Length: 236
View (tube, rainbow, N blue to C red):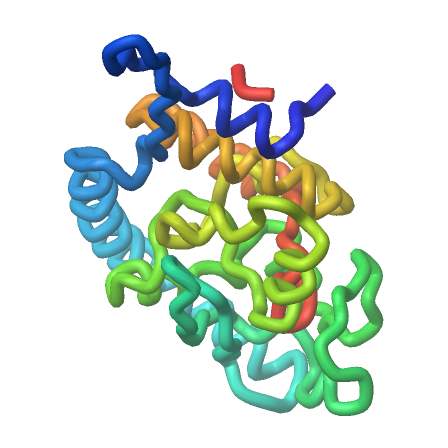
């Protein structure tokens, strides 16, 4: 049974005595120094190495996309980042051009017919996310963090889910606890609980665990998408 968002936040608090008063101090560990500086330094180093190592794969993916369907190789889409700041996320294109021309922003299903043949394979192994390493270098994203959502969905979720804006305390990530622990159809409210657990319980060990689990997910070809990923796209 997953706790509610309030329970997750309260569980991360520390009791502090102030005279005859007992206060609950709550601080998101991922936002505090030196955690934030350590994360940024790690992001820069790992993303640079990853780009260099995977460049041949980028070339292969670009060729497959070009041969599979007409349209651009890369896809840009507006997302909500840290502090509510908007930025353009980069992905390898996995859908036909003009996929939302008639429908507008929608949450696609696993078997969405707008996904190309190559796109389905890229999504299964998360290879469509590789260009987001550039977003990490730019400072828009982190390697690990809550998945960035589209503004349309953020507005909807903030009206429906209490505490949803708290996930914007940190940079969004290429992968996150919700992606490695959740399922494809995990509700947004449950993904938020995973995101808040990550933000408030952050540690280098937790960061490493998520990265290693993400690699395992990529090798098996199964993962949980964020609701925004479709249109392009308890702790142990």
